[in-house]
Length: 84
Image 1 (cartoon, rainbow, N blue to C red):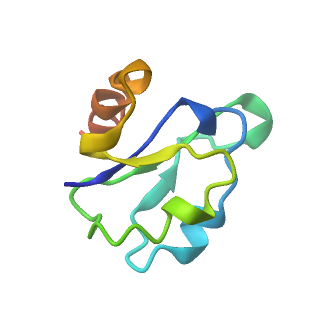
Image 2 (image 1 turned 135 degrees about the vertical axis):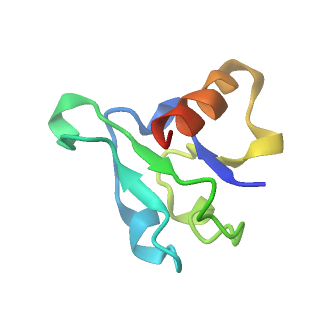
């Protein structure tokens, strides 16, 4: 089960999570520019569920898929669609 980046990342795009990911599965949206409110995505096929990214997120935007809060459930599909 992969980790999911949710709404609090939008406009923050702090890349601390990218720096600690041992498999480089966290990617910025195309045309990444943190001034434009873009966000980061976790490739579900590459994620090894290590959770190293979770404590690094300054806005608590990263959750295990089964623990994504109800108000951000749509980000599970948004994340999956990004990698199709």
